[in-house]
Length: 218
Image (cartoon, rainbow, N blue to C red):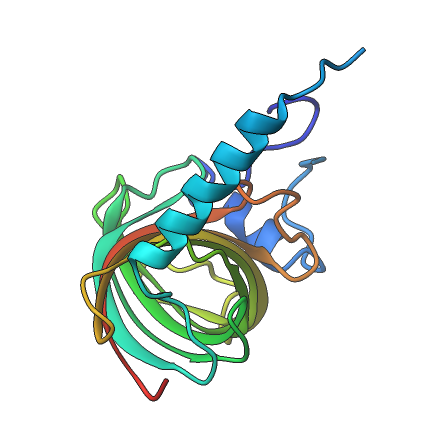
């Protein structure tokens, strides 16, 4: 428990997994609660000239009406509990609504072993918006996604016979190898719709992926 708020994850109890409560909070599981200095004009002029030179040294890497298609490999984990860190695989697509905003779709899956040897899998399909900042070849971004999640495997919660709606926040950075190819790192924090992440780095479930993508259509 951190600051009076229960950690979100998989419980040590096989019968009452904590992640069931936070991904589907309508299902009750157990008794768990949860005077400035003036800047010289010369410095201002020099800074403006430097910025103009840098911006002119490389073409913009984030484009309106640009399509993205790619995939990634990485790891996934629950926020504590008996589910071990497992491998994760993702496929993504995006469309540039403007130089600053992308419409994004993400397919993600991960597999985990439990302490007793059983296996737990979690799959998701999400869509949302990303806000990006074009800094020469580097493009950092943040975003918010909403999607469908489903458990499978013999270690899934007993009360999870179907899917549920979840929310995720994402932090990432891409590097433009060229106008057509890019590499990147993305971190996502996931939670149930009725208990979404309260910050960019809070969630019941975490995925981190190294990604590559192809871009076209600018």
